[in-house]
Length: 606
Image 1 (cartoon, helix red, strand yellow):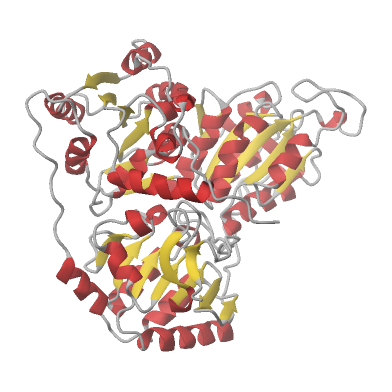
Image 2 (tube, helix red, strand yellow):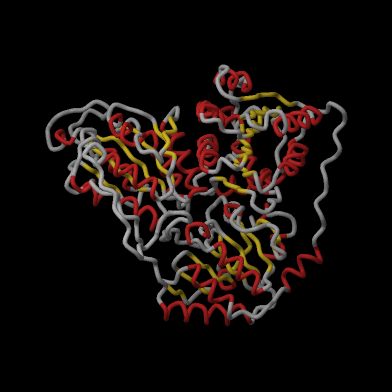
């Protein structure tokens, strides 16, 4: 029997990768003496040290929700000139914002209060963990004198054990630091932050509420920039892996290469493109890697997503006699209910620090970017698969022309969205049908693209849009959010307005959880309709720049886009699109039925 990848009879791929220092984060090795700044006692505090460390690694905005355990800490964070406080409406959105910020800056940070704040932000931190994003989650903790006593504190579950929050975070962060004395605070904070950068995962830092303002000699000097030792490949393992992979691929007739989401955490995007340049292989991406590889590359053939791939991509990938997957995650969503037509013996799977060739052998301690760079020098040029793609490719059709004042169809909407994209824009796609509609957008050079596929938490995009836009104010973020998702996290549109962001939000109002309908329908998928523009107008309340409108037909859409890009280009623009409840992409219909079939498999016989 053939062993298949992304099918029911195959074990899940190992997702426990080890990341590298994010792009833009400080890893400078001091090669000459740098005069150290000595602080007076008022500035030589734990809080200011933490603030300086955040600024040093590239965090200039921190997303916060105040609570009595973190108020003094916030005083010292906002006293740092290079750090801006972005006050959020709730902790979940603060965490999502730090996630979005990390996607652009390479690292993000949020600050919440003990337990009630920590457990609220936990879901967002779990999402960042699943997406390999370094987020520093800082919690204002109990007074250090209360540890080890029998006291019961507020914001807890009523037990004198204060470790509940810590235990929850242990499964969704790669390091946890509980700072309840000053002697080891410097070491714990630096270890936590550096671990986040090295592992490309979130970390948890709890700081006693009475410690942030206390001066200590260890904080009296400007912190020396992190000098993180570069991770190295095992030389012999690398050579053996490259030799075996080159032999495997050079004897193939029509090999292809597919980029996965872990290209980001492995910092192997450039090496992946260089391999495509050198090899001539047809180049595709998994859906969760869209935006990681330039779509204007001459060998780019689209998104490989099994039965819902972009046109002609799956046919080329699945008919190949060898495929190299760099940084893939084969889960039930990315494999369309475990239905990919791939064979393990034809695949080279490259994870951030491991290479597996066919059914074996496997090589550990081999970094993805080193492997791809070295492999590029060993491969024969072979563009057979790309030539086959060019032979069968038929250009996309266009939606039927709408009649005057005809109710707006979603495919017509995205035809106009395509024209809005440029190097000065970035796309954020919410969990739902926006996944599928946005996958079909052709990204021009420099256009950003983000969505949360592995975790798929509805409502993620509101906070992520806030964070991403704050990280790259020079880009205009265009977000696509379903009405059901928006109802989960709508409040922080307020924070976008408050901070002068110029995002364009397209709110798709189709009356419910459309993605859930296509997996398993029921009355619970119908939601109460809101006056969404009225809600955002109320949030705006005449303070800041915000413009809202509803569109029901193509003519109104064209006018709204012209206004958003013209007179209101410096405002947050909220465009509510009224769509029919059954107006979905064909890809969602196919994907939903396959995921439903996977979810409804009967139990194995006992």
